[in-house]
Image (cartoon, rainbow, N blue to C red; front, side, top):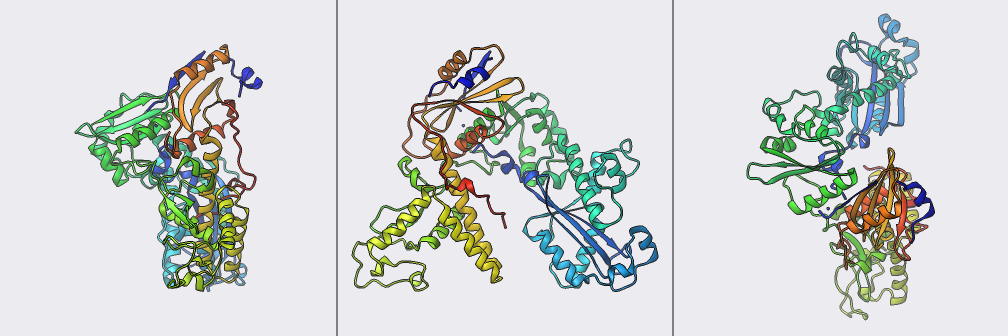
Length: 585
């Protein structure tokens, strides 16, 4: 495909080009922990009749559930404490005995709050002066014989003491912090209003603490802790680390690579390992072992991430948990036999990519996708290789007895009928997920109506696996098999260029104003790594790298500049991209 006319005008700018011959990025956020934008925070505030559980009781619960800066839901209820509201509390909160008389008792209010909060499903509990609120919630749970879910608790009071000084605020009361940050909601000693204000305070405090390396949930657990003395003494290892994007390596006493990571700003990220933000036992152990830090400055974040992936695959550092074996991810496909079945494989021929899902993160996720498609199609799940004509001694299994298998092993179906279900599975694996998704959604609704919530959750996880595997496969089909394409993305007053061959990042470059784009693209192509046509998926590069490149192309105003030959980049009309992933847990 020739240079697009629009590209010629937008790419006019001196070219800087580099080949990327060393390469899903190690998903840095995943390898180091859960990114804060993916954490579900439940910000809670309680009003009570006094200061101590037992002697006092809860009169109001307010909570706001947020993730990634988005409010997912709110909860508010008055609670009848079973005793009159003290006059002093009424003056402070405005809550009167008459107001709480018709309200639910704590034995009704607490279960509703716990269900909303999802603290047993990974949500993080947040409160200002959290010790107070948590003590009342735990006491109420104990009185009702409910197991306390023991969530991770974040105290915005402690965060404020870490992030601010007395020069910023006279004290660390919620009202003072709200005034400092000019929150939209002013705290007024009512539970929901105070919870809403605390949400805003939480977000502003996280922004204040970000320069200390606060990016992950694990960082949040340690940000208020002191830095170990031994680690503080090692901070000089980061003195020579430059600013800018790149890859860093922690080197052990035997010159071995302990850990590899990437950053948009090497100096900021590496220095964070020597702050209170880094006290996770595994990474802390690695930092304590390290005697040197080596860096590879890169032209762009994308180049840094790709180099990181490739270095991790090559070096197999012991402290990297993700992307160490990126070419061995599981796939789901059909077997080639008279009565095909769904199977999970680790190697997939490039010719099989048209009718497959994956790669999946885990074998369990791949199995969940298999179980989902089996439920839709009634394909057999046994692993025996069946003859075209069943043996007279064959016996059906329990799956047939419950109607979950067509049982070709005993002749309960013929090749034509079984073939129809094979074709349905083939269509789904090829990217037509409408039937599968609607079937699973319908099953979830039926189970939920029957109050079989655990079974509904199982089906929901299967649906999630189908959408994850289907989406990854259709993205690889669309992008990963293109012999060559060039894309550009605006960054400040420049354009970042990438050249990709068979899904592998082969070269990166920059265009500054005033350069002829055709000459710059020719330079980019000359510098690019040669990538031969692979015969298996991941032969040119792990699917993770291709997925990273795809993500780059779909964000930040990126534009395709050239696509080789007759290649077309398109997604199926009824593919996985049409549906949002169901929530986890």
